[in-house]
Image 1 (tube, one colour):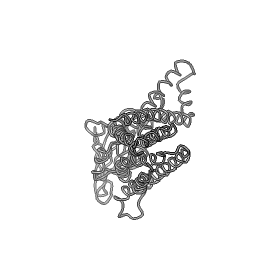
Image 2 (cartoon, rainbow, N blue to C red):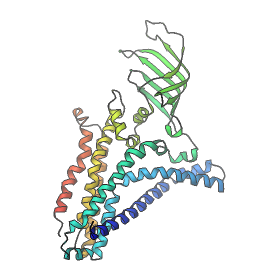
Image 3 (cartoon, rainbow, N blue to C red):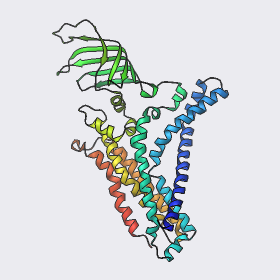
Image 4 (tube, helix red, strand yellow):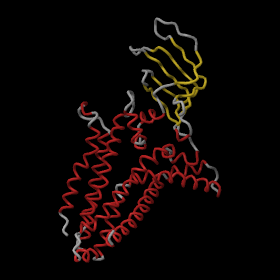
Length: 379
């Protein structure tokens, strides 16, 4: 590695770390400001304001945002390299260091080469975060601010859901995995025949998910069969377990939200292979967005570098504005396409291709533009 490469690379890595801590810190502070009422409410539920309650709240906040940092890094991963690269090149230009480099016969794009290579390598951290870390801390990431220090459980209902055996499952209360093992209170399962007529009724006071056997363990569960008009209902028969395709994952997918974005790509592929799965369009959206994001990270960097890679310090303000404008437009297009990918396509025949088309749209638009800008850099 040449002296110039080491110098540029060390400056880029320093700026990368600075951008990482600054942007993550801003994310945490803004999140606390917007959720300040929830945090104050949690503190009031902990009891009188004293050293002990403040210590419990402070410890809960540290734990809460420690896990959230991995999610914030996933959001900011495409932005941090571009910010670090821009500050590195702007400083080199402002100090007239690029002039000395060009006098030595080194093209400007050659100066940016170690930055691009390092950014590609660092983008692998986002993949590790997405595929290995986040899927293993989903219960912690699903916690709300109102649940700090375990003050309140998350209680939801399970609306009628159809499983792979054409049964209808519903529950009055559902406790998410963030509160412990997933559980349901007052469970009802209606069996149906091919004509959608009820054939059986299973009900239980409580159902707790057993991850080892992949089934629900029932409390006071009984089943009554023979509910067709020409049949005579049987006496209630005790039932200890329920085997169904309605798992905690399926319930979370049915309720949608941000749960799909937390799953690993391997798990998404498994869910898409099932004959009956909820949230299929969201699963396709996230899967194709993951693949497109690998190129988008590079595209965002290549939009920023040509904008600030100039040999004229007098044009730094214009270069900075151009970099902000191009990267902002790209991120805005990513946001728009991300939302469109989760919507129903205008033509039902596009159901499987629509999420992929929307996910790759920013690459098709800004990829050629980034190559064009690189070609126009004056060395």
